[in-house]
Image (cartoon, rainbow, N blue to C red; front, side, top):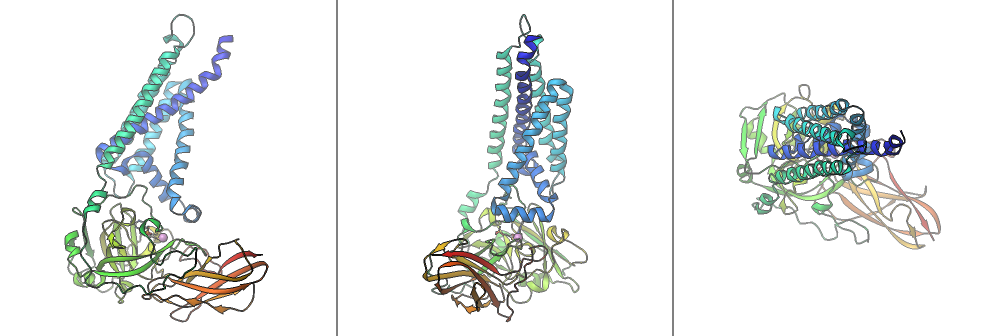
Length: 513
Ligand SMILES: Nc1nc2c(c(=O)[nH]1)N[C@H]1C(S)=C(S)[C@@H](COP(=O)(O)O)O[C@H]1N2
Ligand SMILES: [Mo]
């Protein structure tokens, strides 16, 4: 009895830890299997994470993008890791009471992973294999650990053979680590970074207009006019980046067309490429938010491609699909109205970064990303809104989603302390494809004053602005609003991003001393 009480808590802890080690072995071996298959999306952890992204209600996703921005996926994976850890500890405790319960828990893990992997948009039956193999490995590990910890396996007396428990535990953790590392290494074989690094893009037949001097206002704290790729915001549902080799890439244009088209990457590069400065922005961007970036895109114009395919009357939607099965819908008339819609292959003078759609993505100036900017695009189905829905429109977001006129104060920063006297107030405004014609600013509830607009190369980029403020001591609220090229002024009414983009004036409170 005394012995039982002394070792009781320790044995509970050992039980919980054996659950953790078995789950680690399961995930490690599953990773190895996913690597052997060469399919990252079949890894149970990633498949469950991706399924979670798809099932997340819009408001929660909005919150995650708003709160964590491009780090939303790291946060999701960390949360998932925490959930798995707790579940694994429970499995260990169950397994200590009765092995069969622990095994059933691991089996349930495997089943969840398999279902998640099989329900990915581009899944095949083989995608269930890593979860199944992993669950079996986890079961074997748990069995070994529980057996090793049984007193009947110990020598004379009731002492558990600690050495044997530790050796078994070390073995299981070794298998987990080796499996995980091996799997990662195998998956890296599919990485297309080196193909991308070696790719040379042809020069544009129609180069971009030069960016005028002064497009970036000279105020410390203002972002450059052109956003470097590594600073460009990233929003997508891809938990692992699709690795699309341009040598295997094709673009299919089909559906309501007279002549379906299938083109290779080389075919695409033989088009008369255009190069344009275009600002991309996300519908999830909040008033004052930074889910926008401006880049120089190189690509094949989309309108001639569609005309060659021969869009049939009645078609009003391009349903584009990415290599990982994501779908986006775009109004056809927008693409055909003369704007520089393109299948982009280059960003800021280089092939698209993998995170931004390598080897090809759509870019349509004036539309939010979710209805236009399909990364890793491989398929364009010409269809009708009445017949087909895309990922976000299925979730209630608007089909027609032109970018709303937006302006933001970038300097001074919110809650900054500034010296009384002359203070530079500066910011960024955008109304892609309509252009920004004016930005006004206001101190407290004083009169609206015109800011000075920086020059821009065209209607499709954001526009920086600057004003000079004679700041007087005290706490002040600065506010701004833009007017677009059609003469319409950004409304003050605050609306959330759902279902077609946020509205409202941005304001910043500063303390002047
Ligand atoms: N394949 C794919 N393309 C996508 C998305 C996605 O989830 N998957 N997200 C869209 C959204 S919502 C936006 S705002 C832009 C963001 O492009 P970026 O990540 O290059 O900034 O990509 C669009 N293209
Ligand atoms: Mo977006």
